[in-house]
Image (cartoon, rainbow over the protein chains, first blue to last red):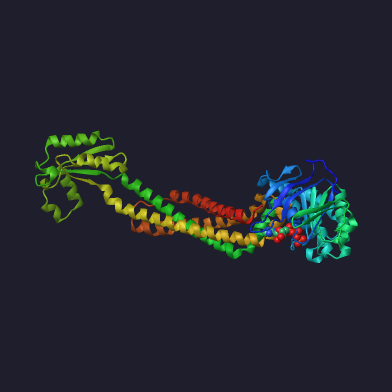
Length: 239
Length: 300
Ligand SMILES: Nc1ncnc2c1ncn2[C@@H]1O[C@H](COP(=O)(O)OP(=O)(O)OP(=O)(O)O)[C@@H](O)[C@H]1O
Ligand SMILES: [Mg+2]
């Protein structure tokens, strides 16, 4: 069972959140109440269409809830004006199944891009990018283009890009979905290392063996409803 | 790094959408060209007004012994009637000066104008005494005309402005036509810019998607697009300004002024004053069109 947590202090907090997309009969999330503390590592599991990606998009304020309240890093997202949304996103790193790298930029440029476009100085970029590339184990491959890298390496670049600005939260939407099991383990070790630096990691996944091995908190959704919230959980009871 | 990024984005963007950018440049050039034409016509009308209105006067012709009609029932105008007319004119606030012209003086002027046989068949008593009236503000002729038109002894009041009116009507009409074409071309330019931006936003959706994700500000995401549009706008406006300058140099100075020497033509000062307006309008037109389009296609 979930432990009782101190209310109001959570890094991510959903209060009775319902999300109904336009022209949809059923809500993607229904009356979801959940809290995620600073420093946690959380798996978001559930069948396809259960609302995992919707959850992550709501945290980023890419979507707005139909009803309910969302707080992220002390900010009430409902009251956060549009022009402040970029500042919220600077504190959140995001990784996707399909990597989303820029194909005509080198590995170094792809990571540097994330700092450039938020106005960081060249000095800072030249300091932070090599450091994060070393962290993800890609030092020495700075000048490769994405199509000269394996899938696992491309995902490391994406993680480096998400983490280079040292975000409070790292959101990962099926980051191992395109990778073979051995490569996936490498990616999970990397996410674990990032989590140990104090960054909260929320990862949506279908990967049963990973969830079962890592033994982290598991939030399970089904048709938009919270059906399980278990610390040190496994992928599913019935398998 | 920031400026370098913006600059390189603008350059690649312009190159990638070269055909669309050229189309935007051309429509902006045409619309600003018509705006420039309209402004040039306006300056021309002003120049001619300044030139003519100095010389324009109202002429109050008074009855001679042969005149018939309402004011001339008493035959030749009497001294009391003249005194009353002169007093009415001089006391009117819009009147600047009044000159009296006797029948003999009218005859002198007539002979000077028509130095041929007609002058010999005319005698002074067939001509009319007149007051030549200069107005402070030539636009205010109507009040003066109506003040003296009905007085006894007044045969006819001629406002020389009326003679120029058709001329100004033509210029006015041309100005409206230029304004209408400008409006249509501006609409065309805005639609084309919107479409160009839409394509550009689509072709760069990968970059802009990542920028949004990592928290780049809207302004920063939109800046390269807006600058691109503004550069196309400046280029178009420069072409239009060059067109206006060429019209002044080759058409007005080179042809019209030589054929119609008695007309006052717009000078270089008036012409060059139009250029900054074209620049500002061109840039605003494209930048605002780009900004409004981006609000739809690059949401947070
Ligand atoms: N933009 C959208 N417009 C309308 N409906 C949407 C949209 N995005 C998601 N949905 C619907 O919302 C529900 C939840 O979708 P979501 O993508 O959150 O599921 P998921 O758990 O991430 O699924 P998967 O495991 O397949 O990625 C689905 O029924 C989906 O069809
Ligand atoms: Mg999903």
